[in-house]
Length: 107
Image (cartoon, rainbow, N blue to C red):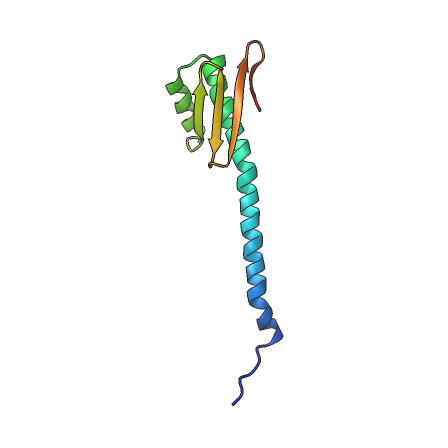
């Protein structure tokens, strides 16, 4: 006995599901890429302002970072250059620098 051919609708289910999966993963990757830059910039600016504008110690600034739910962002403070670099999800790094009279700016 010959096997029946799958209907036209059944032949499109797998390709459509794979296309939707790919679109979802692409959107997630784009969101992570853009979101990581925003998160890194916010964390760098927050710590820079805390350290150099409010003149708090490093421990207090790191605690404030955790209170603002940015504890997952890696932050490095360069005291000699008055800069703070922040890396989010290992994807994007943003540096905030302090300038007398202007405060902290992220770049």
